[in-house]
Image (cartoon, rainbow, N blue to C red; front, side):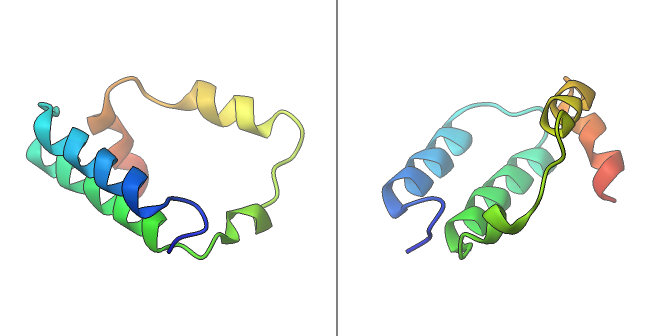
Length: 74
C-alpha cells in the first residue's frame, strides 16, 4: 500500500473522477493516472525541498483551466 494514498482513498478518487464530467477525456485520463501514480508512490515526496514562500508561489501560478496546465507537461 502507498505511504501517500491508501487503497480506499484512491478508489474513491478514481470513482469520483469517472462519475463527474471533466473538461476533456484526455484530462480525465491524466487525473486518473495521477491518482494511480500517487497510490503506487513510496512516499518520497518528503524528500523534495521547498524554499520559503515557494508553495504559495506555485499555487498562485496554477491556471484555472486544467487544459492550460498541459503546456507545462508536454
